Image (cartoon, rainbow, N blue to C red; front, side):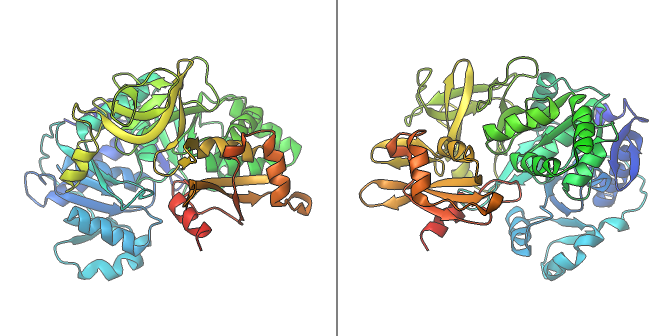
Length: 496
């Protein structure tokens, strides 16, 4: 039996999910997911890894559908609720999905897809109480397909087994000391490992409560926090930035109330993108918590984390999680000495099974001795890993130097009139690449920064070869739904 389901039977009357102003206990989740599983089976014994796509709002319905797919022996394919029709169509075709479960909110969106043959369209409200016997699911079976963000090419379907998912969950509940008394607010997309595994699955594995709000809104988040039930929170850096901006404009009495409540939290985590040191420091001033940074990917879940108990270093992601092997290698996949930059490679039970229907891409993703090549460049120093950037977009090769775009971004964000920034490498015949920076200004007091003033300011903070040569001023940076800057799009903007 799937352990996540088995564990739920130990807490039948504990609150599992809060959503849409309702509370649901673990017994409710088990009953609803059983009905969903039997509805999908339609008298068959097992779905035998048929792909079941679904698009519903975050909350109880999402959980019951996901668990129902697993209990029926299917592969869950959660769709992004903010993706356009073309992206949804791509996933359905790529996975050759047999079912698409949808709630009424998305009926109009998917209407043009209903002429696709081979897909059964199921309105989620049509699922009624069922009777029958569910299959026994072994843990080696495929459980889920999540799609990469596509920041470095076409999105690929990442296949994880139930065993992979369990390994990912266990490493986090062990390291972050999850308890059944925990209560977490989930504001993250549920087509991504951060929201599905780190938040939802870890909470439900532990007998804890996972609460949802329909959409991220700083005011609503703080309203939930002020109820004094939530004690764990995980988000991406852009969310923390927006919470800080909202908090800054509140009256002092409201600020003090929020700060007092935040101080009582057990754990706060940031991930999915590099956390600017300035954001970490400001959030610590507000909440009295130094955010725990960790490192992971769709293909591996989480692999590295700062300690729950112990020193958390700004700009660093910590150490390897339990049962996860991590090494830093050169371009020939050979381990490098401490202090030398190289690619992060990972091995362990958390690592995905394959890219869906892409055997060559799967082979290319691993070394000959089974290490997954993340494509992320890091350095191991002072007993902690530090991310320098993604090999293809964050490492700029200019004039013989390998330069970290993330390092330059961190310096730029420390300027009092720069709200946000993105740094990329632009092809150049002489230098290979030149450094280009896109800047979002704070607009405080209508201050205007000239390029020359900025270059002069940078001279005291960066060596000359790391100072950007091209600049672009924008209202906002292009981002994907997880808040990551889409640097391929940013590069195009410099080449227009």
